[in-house]
Length: 165
Image (cartoon, rainbow, N blue to C red; front, side, top):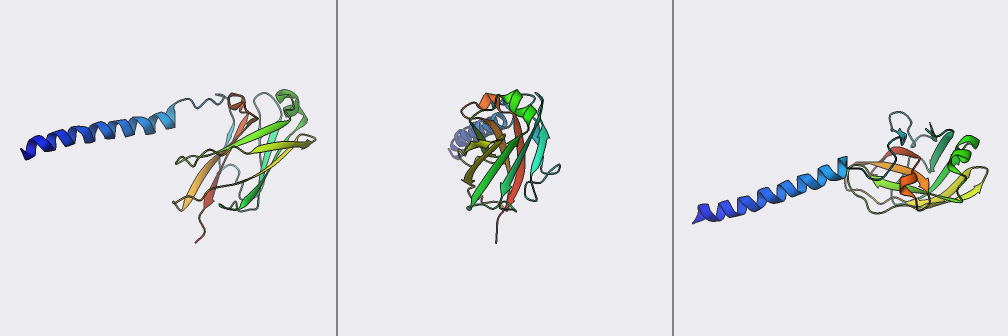
């Protein structure tokens, strides 16, 4: 009788494990809707914790992101400054507002997409607060896009936050 019960429970556990594995793999490898040629700036190439980072856009021009204060804290208000040069403004059509989708790379950290208001001359500014993570450090992906148009994302900057002790 014990063997029959164990076999029934084991079958359910295996099914749950397979479902969880499929979920994790789907989240990691399936298309999330961003452009295939989206430039991604890794923390090793440029660290937003020490200063602004820039990248060239495939459609032309350059985008620069700065997050303050530095190093980037969690649970404190952050100022987000995004700058498009003239060529990038021309390529993107100078939208009135942009959004910066902030997503945890290692784990889901909730929906975070602050609006950045156009302040003139290709500059966009907004504020947000990052939630605290239970792990010692967290890698974030900050994806820039015209407001309400995730499929028109044009650059992604990754950065790492660390928990204070």
